[in-house]
Image 1: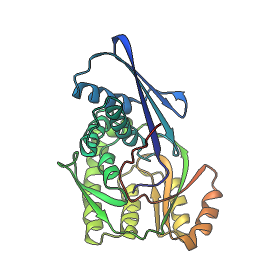
Image 2 (image 1 turned 30 degrees about the horizontal axis):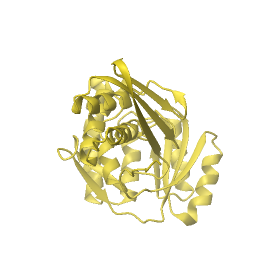
Image 3 (image 1 turned 90 degrees about the vertical axis):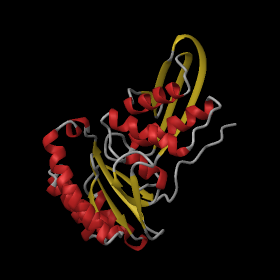
Image 4 (image 1 turned 45 degrees about the vertical axis):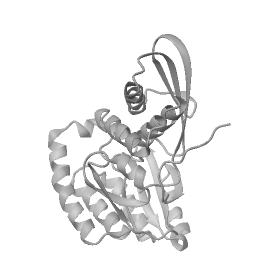
Length: 271
């Protein structure tokens, strides 16, 4: 699901002598941000730019990195769109999403986030691959829903995505999860099956899933662990929001309350 708490990305380009240099800052601090760097390199290659340029990418984040909030793909897509605009050669959103998808996969930071960023709302990647090779199925939802997230720390995704044994188990459980969700495509089904997936795949953390269960007991329509991160998220109707926030607050961590964003990337006009 796409949430209103997200990333704003700004790109500045400057002429320079010699090879291209790429700088990335997250909330003002220099960052390795390998997925963003990969996306920037692909955009420059797409336009045949090999030298004479300094690229400065600035991300302003409302959510933490490395915790299953999709910041790697989101930052990569924002960088692709903003850089192409700064170069005077704006890319179509679908092409930027393909660049973000490839950058996410080769950087071992994600597998299917970029497709969902284009669609917005709530949905499911039912066929792998960048648009239009992949497929994203939207799930209808009530616009009054909130997402309550609780963040405890990052997880290095490459440790999971590099393991053949883990991926085999994830794919097996994931295929069954997909069938169950598509048989009754509602937010409640998605959250219930995502909770089940987290446990059966072996990726889920017992303590985090227990917190998710407590949030559901407090009135959320469902909750589960972020994939992949030390964080949980619950989807809540407005009238139950105070009760779910109260329960989540008892566990410490960083609390994020957001609406579901029903749209794709939004250009910001800088004057």
